Amino acid sequence: MAGAVRSGYSWQMVTPKPGFRRPRLSRLQKQRLRRIPVRTLVPNVVTLLALCAGLTAIRMAFEDRYVLALGAIVFAAILDGIDGRLARLLKGTSRFGAELDSLSDFVNFGVAPGLILYFWGLHDLKSAGWIAAMAFAICAGLRLARFNVMSADPDRPVWAANFFVGVPAPAGAIIVLLPIYAAFLGLPRSPFLTWVTLAYTLAIAALLVSRLPVFSGKRIGTRVPPEMVGPVIILLVLFVALLIAYPWIILTIGTLCYLASLPFGWVSYRRYEQRAREGRAEASTTAAASPNPTSRIQLADDEERPPRLN
Image (tube, rainbow, N blue to C red; front, side, top):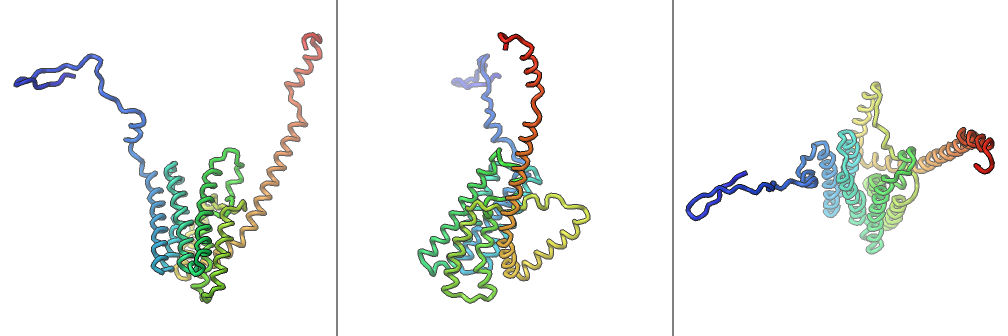
């Protein structure tokens, strides 16, 4: 491709060398310039909205507006349950979205609930209260890190996807705020309640990092029969209406029911393990009872061949 170059007061045509080529973009540069599909952005936007709700909860707690702070935590938990399902529905899952979701969950369900409890009552215990709030946030971070590692384990059995290892971070954030729900229902504030809150916070933090099997519920709601669409919508609208009208009663009942269901998850997990062991034992027994036909043929050939060839 020829070009013009000004030399003195005249223009001269310059012809490039025969081996001249325009620089080409590398494959990595092309990937960077590739347009990102909208289906990948939508779940990330929902995750960022949840993060905004968690940060707003911290601000509301700092301003002693605990009703709005708890509402922001519940809203963040609802959005956290939506973004993953939305990503799978739109086929917009990505590694970036998974990492962003983990960081958002640490702020929303680790840092924010711990600070809310500290501003609400644990600050009366000074350093002990701060240690409890900090321990809950750290346990939530450890819980999320372990979840990311275990989700990539290829040796994990299929039935294990029905269970979490330890209480998940969103559920832990909702149930750890039970003392505040009780205070809004009329339980008098006292030093005894503050110490109970400290012990309860540490207990929930231990459940986060425990090895206790907990129902995941990920496979619930993926498919709804046509005849159940109407009742499901009615129940969902009814639940939202009750949550708005009687938030502290619904949250208290839900927390107590969740805590009561933890032993049932452990029993169900043990049953799955027992069935898996029985299946492996039966498979090994069947394999031992039926010899390999190729080995039988090889044995017959060896018997017919001379000893020097065996």
